[in-house]
Image (cartoon, rainbow, N blue to C red; front, side, top):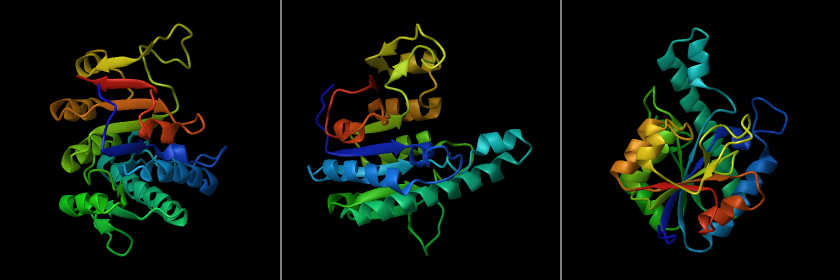
Length: 238
């Protein structure tokens, strides 16, 4: 697969922004570090959009498992992603990167509503666009949001920042014999039920020919390296 791309989606989990040792917080220092890495990649002329999760504050599926209505729980999670999106925007602006937050749920006092053509125009003008609010619908993950927005804005590739250095055939944290894939097809990821992204996201990317790079964001500088084409993690593609 060619490592040349112009427009990308960076998928960040809410946990990636969490204060060390905390269960439900945002670390300004960690967000600033991420913003500086994005800035370095942005300065190369790369068009960058970001989809951020909300797991540092809320997980809809977990709340539903404890008796809460699932749709309501998911809407709460969407609001959590907007808080994270605003935090990322604030730090990007602080380090000199122009940015916009667009949300799938209208909240005009704090962010723009998602408008596809406007998002593309922001990217063309050199602004980083941060998508919050998920898809605006319950029962869909922010992985699916990343795949959907990548398809809508014509992104060349999705970079998913995780806590492991790629996709494994089994959980490497509990299995010493786990093997990491360097490349993987969408069909294999779906047939093996690999959980690094949900099936809807994989299918959307497969249908629209958008490769996914899964990489470890905890290694210093890896976000910048991934965005600028370094050989990291696992590539999922056709």
